[in-house]
Amino acid sequence: MKAQRTRSQERIINILQNLKRSISAQDLYIELRNRKQNMGLATVYRSLEALKLQGEVQVRTLSNGESVYSPVRSDRHHLTCVNCGVSVPIDECPVHELEDRLEASHQFKVYYHTLEFFGLCDRCH
Image 1 (tube, rainbow, N blue to C red):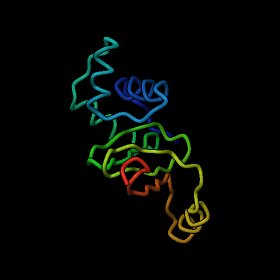
Image 2: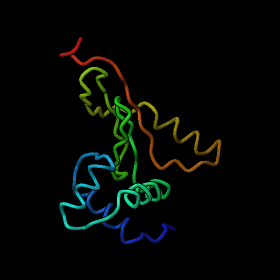
Image 3: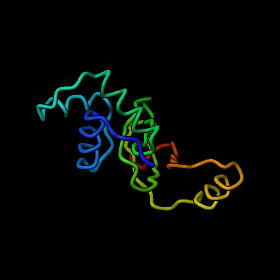
Image 4: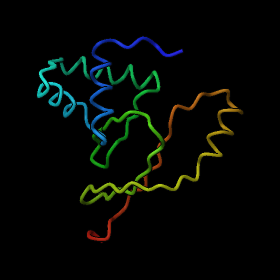
């Protein structure tokens, strides 16, 4: 059973679902202000954390250390350049079977997983 969302969580999840890209908490805060849906930055962070714990939002850490958020749709994996920061989504996923085995062997509910490869893109190497 899903937890009841707060109004702040509803606003955030609606924006994330409409964006089609990952976004940082700070950029989400600005997006909310641009849409005249003022919300404090601390509330944005608290709401994102609650949505993450409910399995509705996933977080990815970029090579510069910044966290970006998106709704949990399906697993997205990336090749990320440590020099220029470009992040290329990849469709292959070698860990779905491992995820199923871990859920069964550890009685652990997996909401999502990420797989990220860091290196140099063709322009930087």
